[in-house]
Structure formats: structure tokens, C-alpha cells
Length: 476
Ligand SMILES: [Cu+2]
Image (cartoon, rainbow, N blue to C red; front, side, top):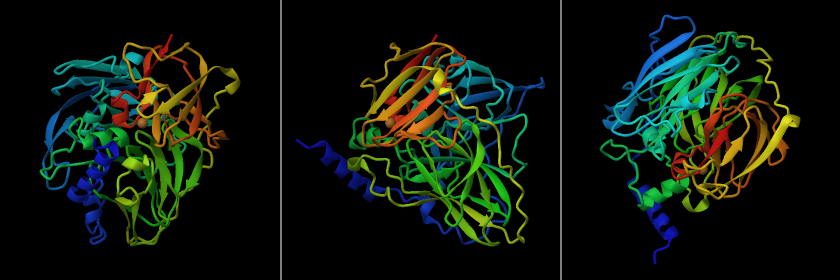
């Protein structure tokens, strides 16, 4: 009998021989200085409403033939014809109305990842939109919830396929009063994908060795995109400060982000700004997480540096890709030739993030993550895994008992990390997704302050989620 491992190793050899070369690492991107940013923002939704504090937009999901990989045409799925889809920009307190039409040949939903909205608007698999069907998503954005979020499909067992075909877009919620000065702002939607030589998207055929590896690892792509572009350029003037909102829309990749020779000032996470900026050399961004960064032009005029994804070992040893330990270039940061400008003054305090009170926690739960399962069970749409009381404060302990990372996402509610492996979390912030590294335990506190109904929690490695690493929380 051919063992599992033999199959996996022989497959790893086949892919390394037949791999499509990555344009992300192939070109000499330092040759010609750009005179403007080549990084393009996705389009922003056009607001059709003239009513105050109302954003009303139309959104369709449909097949599209697009040049996703340079020089090739790909059969993709697209929101309003673009990959990534248009960015939804709103302000705290806005009423948002999205007229959605499903022009895909399959059922879909739209999940508004990270937003605190009613359960029937969350786009979970409980509210499918069939082919040709329509749904109006209507919700109000709470005050105090400004931040960077995203939207993507969440149908039963097809989330990974549909996102990998091109369905994802960003949401930016702005606060009534932003503590940061007006800064040049960039949106960076990170994703990766894998293609056949003819440009078609390489999604493994079920039950093949390739599919088994993807089920285990999650599907890593070898072409790295920022806003759907390969190795674009952002220009920065020496001394300038830019505000970057970074979203990991990849299926499974954990980005360890760094710019050699400079540091970031991290100012926010999934659920908006921190209390204080934090200077860091690297950012670990698991799939579906977001960060807000201040990038300071500390380099000399004319210098070119690169935003990189440094090696990060999230894998089981037996299925670790053979190129996992190579840094990947994502984007060129090119200093202009202008004389340095004086950096703007930055506030030391951004906002208050009031701590959820652990003494008010009435329920403590343990959720054990193993490979493909949560608490030894796979997803069942007809089962409730966790019943909670509306208004309750709970502490959840997420224990990863296996040798690979699992990023854990709770729908509908932002939580605060308490500790990792018993070490208290130093910087309080709001999160909806937390990477739980191999053999580690993370505890968070959450308050179910509104929105009764059924909610999903799951591993956000899309292959894991689609294969059942998900459960249902019912709040009554
Ligand atoms: Cu997982």
C-alpha cells in the first residue's frame, strides 16, 4: 500500500518541478523609478442615496474573464466586475443598504467580516442566495466601531472556492473624529493565488494528492498580489508618514510583514485603533486579519526598499511546502528624489479601548482545535455547539492541540485577547480573528451585547473551514 506520506512527498516533488514561476520574484522591479504609485486602489462603491448618513449601493457577483496574472486571461468570479471588488466606505452611524444580485452559477452569500450587525444580515450559510437570487443587506454601523473590515462569500462548503476565484473586497469605516492627522492613506489587500500555464486558476481536483495537501495546509498560492497587482510600487517622500490599512485576504497564508531597514508604527488591528501606537519590526498577519500601520519615510531620497513576507512556519512538517523558508517580495517602496520633509507630529494616545471586565464573565468555555475539528466535531448546520445568553460576558479559551496554526474567527462580535499561553496580552485591542499557533492556547473575553441568533465560529484557513472546522453559536 502506498502510504499517505509517500503520496504527499511525491506530490511535493511534482509541484516543485512543474511550478509556474512567480512573477512576484522574477522581475527586476528596481530598474526604473516610478513617477507615480503603480499600486491602484480598488474602485470605491458609488453611493446611490442622497439621504443623510445613508450608503446605498448595488453589488453583483458574476463570472468574469480578467487578466489576474500579468499576460494571461483568467475565468474568475468578480464583484461588480473587478478583483478585488469595490471598497465599501462608510462612517460610524451610517445606515448601509446593499442591493445584492447573485449572477454566479452557484449559491453564495456575502459575509461582512468583523461588522457588528444582525445575524440575518451576516451572510452566514444560514441565509443562502441561490443563483439568480437577490438579497438586500441592510445594517447600521455602530458608533465606536471604525476600522478596516472586508466582505467575502460564506456559503456552505464553497467559501474557499469562491474567494479563490476572486470574490473579496475591503470595507473602511471612518470614525466621527479621527485622532490621527490627515495622512496619505493606502489600502493593501494581500492575497495569493495559483495558476495553470494557460492562466486558469489552479484549484486541485478533489481527492487527488494535491487536494489532500491543500486540505491539510490550506491552499497557498505562488503568485503574490497586492490589490490584485503583482509587485506594485508605492512612492514615499523622505520624512513623510503614510497610513496603510492592510488586509490578508489569502486562503491560508500567514504574512510575516517587514520592510528591511525600517520599522512600522502599528496603530490598529481588526476592530480599529489601539490606545497607543506601538513600534514593531514585523507584523504577523494571519488570513482574514487586518492591521493599520504608519509607515514613516525614514530612508534617504532615491532609496528603494521592499515590503516582504518573511518565512513563517505555520505548517505540519510532513506537508510544509519546500519553498516555505524563502522571503517573498510584495511591493516596492520607492523614495522620491524630493528633499526630506518634516515628519508630522503623531498623537501618543489614539483612543480609549475600555477593558471588558473579567469579573463579569459568567461563562468560561474551552474550544479545542484539532486537525479539521473543533471539540472533536465537524460542522453540522443542524446542531448548535455553543448556547449563550444575550447580554452575557464570556471567556473563551481556544486550545490548539495540533502541530499547525489555526486562525480562529468569531462572527459578529469583536473580542479582547486576555492572554496567550497564560502570558497576559500587553496591548488591549478589538479583534475578530486570532491566530492560534501550533500547540498554543489563546484566551479572549467577549460580550454578547446585541444581535441574538445563530453565529458561526471557525478556523479561517478556508480549506479547513469548508471541510468542517466550524461550529455554531446561538445567542438567545
Ligand atoms: Cu485551521
